Length: 334
Image (cartoon, rainbow, N blue to C red; front, side, top):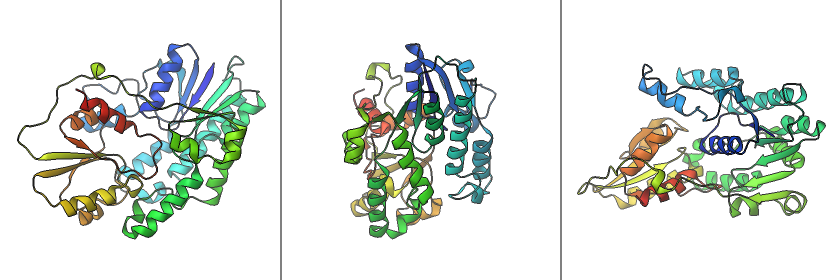
C-alpha cells in the first residue's frame, strides 16, 4: 500500500492516483485542495474551471486535504494582494510546499497511516519531512522528479537570464534560496527510488546519484485518439493558428517564440497563447502585441482550443516531458 502526496495535483498526479487505486495499492492521497463535484451547474463557469483543476477521480474517502495556506495563496493572488504569494512571502508556493510536507510527515508519524502502508510517494520540494517520517517507519521512499536536476536547471536558467534580461522576471526558480536547494539535495538523499519522465532528466542526475539510487525512466503517456471526444474546430481558409500552451515564461521559451513571430510578421499567421501569467500582461504585449491570450483553462478546454489550432509550438529549455506536447501529438491524429 502507498501514500501518495502532492500539494497541487495535475493531470499526471491524478492519473497516478487512478492507477494505484485500480491495482488496489492506494491507501491515501494527500493534497491541499480537492473538490468532489466541480461540474455543479449552478457554479459560475470561471469557478467551475478552477475547480476542475483540483478534481481527483478516486473515492474521496481516500483523500486528505490541507487547504488553508494554499487557499490564502490563491485568494491573495486573485484579489491583487500578491506580495504574500510572491517568493519569500508567507503564502508563497515554497511556503505552501514546506508546510504541506510537514503536514504529511505528521500524518505518517501518527496512527492515521496504518502499518500496512509500505511506501511514501512524493514530489520534488514537498518530500523532505515526508521521507524522514517514512524512514522512521521503514517505509520505502519513492521520489518523482518531473524536471531536470536542480543543478542543470539553475545553469540553464541563469544562461537565459543573461541572454534575455527582459524575460528574467518570468523565470521562476531562478533565485531559489540556498535552503530550498539544500532541501532538494536532502530529498534525493532520502529517496530509495527516483522516477523520471525522460532521458534528459535521467542524464541530469549526478553520476553518484544514478549509481546509488534505483532510477526508473517512466515516460508520461496520453490517451489514445479513440478516447478523445469532439470534432476538430479548425476553420478552413482562416489564418494559420499556432498555439503555445504552458506557463508564460522564458523557461518554456516564450521569448524566442515571440521573437520568431516578430520576424515572421505575417497577418495570415495567428499565435494563440494559453497559460498562466508570470509577469503583467502588459509586459508580454510589449514583447509581441499580436497574440490571442486564452488564460488558464481546465483540461477539457485546453484540448478544445488545441483542436482549433494547426501548429503546436513549445520551445522549452528545461522540460522533463511536457504532457501538453503528448496531447498535441494525439490531437493531430484525429
